Length: 398
Image 1: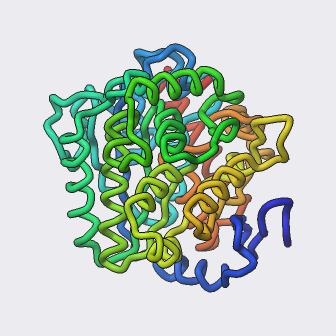
Image 2: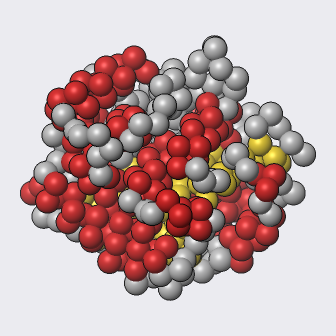
């Protein structure tokens, strides 16, 4: 079954992207299916002072609360709603943390993440990999044009690459980076890709004008040469997540592994930054081993009345066309229209949409056989558990 810009696969997962008709999508999804229980799953937590700009992100209702969103989401993913945690979920205007969806899907899949952290203000209270000193702190706001030192970017890139190169299994990369869609916007625009009006975010109506203002200010201040390297761009207007993820991706590709990039705009930015450093003649071979995995809520989003629906699909196709490659995107087909929990139904009206690998983990669960009814029931139960937990009382009304 075909949608406006995507194809509905037998599993219920959506497939999309320019060049889709030229690929054996079912064959590629079959390879993904065969590797579901044999996959290295990484969650990258990172911080940027960009997230502290008022109105830039809904991943926490205040700038202060967004400072601990990443650690709180990771704790929920690792420990579930009922177990007491060091960091409570920050209050949200609507919806519930996508980490809850990721928790449900990952439990069904029986997989747990390796956590990598960089640029956080807190030391995570769980096992994690640190590729730099915790004293480095968050990246500066992208509007400075000097978000990170290039030495820092190279260190994180090299650390990610070393991990990726050692992999013997397929790779799933996920993230939690408040303000990360703004830094994604910045590096994509810095690469010369037309992304205006196509960058999403955690708000129901993303603050596109504010993001564009910050991005243009940052790129102007950076005074980059024409055709900057990916390291130069990340140092100027990026965040610590980006070099780690780019390194992981490039290392995994070198070791011959398939890679599922779990997320939306931020993962497209990672892919674009990697492609920018790969010889043009090799790019198609590389993208043949990469999937973008996200949610149906992001895929269905329209950010401009002047455009058709599916802004994210248009964004992905812009990236593909810029590098003259085909990119295969997949999205979970789960919907929360029938949920008993308002915070889950909020996803259906445009709140939250994606994060913490919710889309990628959900589509893997869907491919493995978790039905729509079962997913909704499990998520409803875990939201109820979240409300019950004394440690998570701040989630009321999220």
